[in-house]
Length: 309
Image (cartoon, rainbow, N blue to C red; front, side):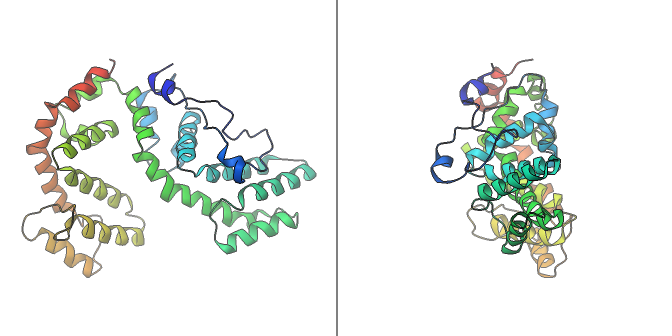
């Protein structure tokens, strides 16, 4: 058994068994006494497969058995496992044939999750109506399912991708040859989850972490290019967090670059190119000194010593 699994595996009775009743799982004392779900092993998993779980949207991790189990462990630790449990219960409900059994399961599901999942009043009302009237109308249950999926996608999945849990799992799988290539490729370092994590820890030790945080924020900003409102909101957040004068995380840019960004945001002229000039400068700053020092650091060399070929 690998080191990560030895450290974190516990009894396997805590996760949702799709073949067992679920009523009461998240009620008061029952929830507090639940044991953590088991960590998935790394056996049979190669690094590219695990790295793909963080690419794109939440579907990638949910469609992989081991990825889904790792996500389940993260949700348990975040006190949010009920969201995944609710979606799994809805999937099970769709597949059930027996009418009476299906109605009873739907009622058990409602009793289990209505106090723990965060739904709008309209979606919760429609869900209750579909179940309590025993119609089980998919159109009435649909809004609740969509809202829970959206919560996983927009809140819990991004936090999972940045979590220590996921990064430790990836590190267990990372071939030494990948990490050795970072010495020849700055871009390879930045584009690798584990590499960027250790680079961040090094930057923190020399009080220069804000540059990488800004870089990561811009990557996330660019990923919202098909969502205008999200892009507008995130653009303003990045400006206020990293570029506003005097902020604790201020990133220093050449004269005029910040002013152009401010003006474009004020004019609502926001698109994927908003931070292009700023990113060019920050990447050059990181490459010129911190990257070279990182390759000589204990942070990098200790990691190399732990990895297998």
